[in-house]
Image (cartoon, rainbow, N blue to C red; front, side, top):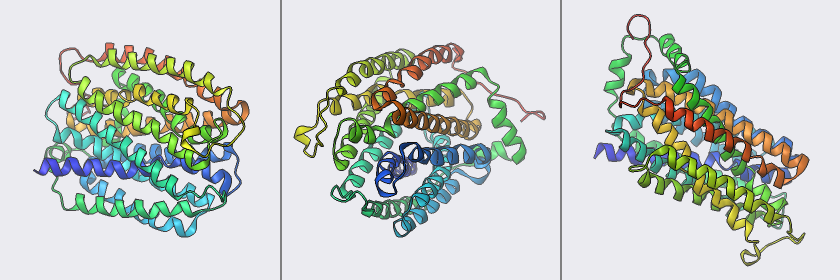
Length: 421
């Protein structure tokens, strides 16, 4: 029963941050009208979010084992609850930057703790892989929910209206509920604490850095970087693409972007079933090839869009439904490679490895969003989305190398510190 409560708590924690973090695409769209900022300037919101994730993960992830997973998650939820309840009263472009910076700090703490906790509540590599996919699919359910929450608050008739900021009151309430559920749930961290008793904080930090020297980890880092670059470059700019290229109204642009999140959620749920039996490399390479094919087929359909604003779902062009289906094919990649790397390391290394996952994922997301935003502004939305083909090709190569480096005996890879740690 305790394990079940912990798993529910992990799902809820992820749900809250899914809505908050992925509201960046909606906020990028809204601040352009609310505060008269350019696309290039709006793209820095992704950097405030992702760089704070990266910096926090790099500096703190190695200490999470000593702080405790549960305590770390509680700190994160408390921080976000306060920020979400404050921002509607002080809405400005500057405060959106501060919100996403705080969200980045909170998510870094949550993600490192959640990923490490999975190793405590699963019993095998297959269960770990399956649970990771289900968890990430629920994350996308949160993203999907967020699109509809924010869209319901947008005023199509007044571009300067900031009533959409009230959505953050709801997020603050959810964070409080998640805090209370976790606070009242017991998490047995004794096995991790035993492994950490004889090590200093400096040892933990050095061990995290030493993980990068492992070839398996190094290739994984690049794989995670390029995957998140692809996902975030599309997810963060899809609402703007819908509005500027497909000529949808603001609320419709946000709502239609939710198809991408729904596709990813469904794809990860299905992957949680398929990857119990199928070879992960074959599944992921087929998915990437399908994603690339969809880009080549769908983006050209945006060339003949009329200049009339679309306000009705019945008038939305077909491509607005087709292109977001790329999420089905991108869906399994991130949770699968995360599970592979974590299940090939001993449990007491999961906190440090989770930190590296968060750092390089954040850097990939920030890089993808900024590059896409600037290409969008300079060359248009079609060219910006064609850009995704480059990292897709790179990622296919990296996955083959990653597979070859994976231990074939079922053993775990470990590093040793001087003194026997």
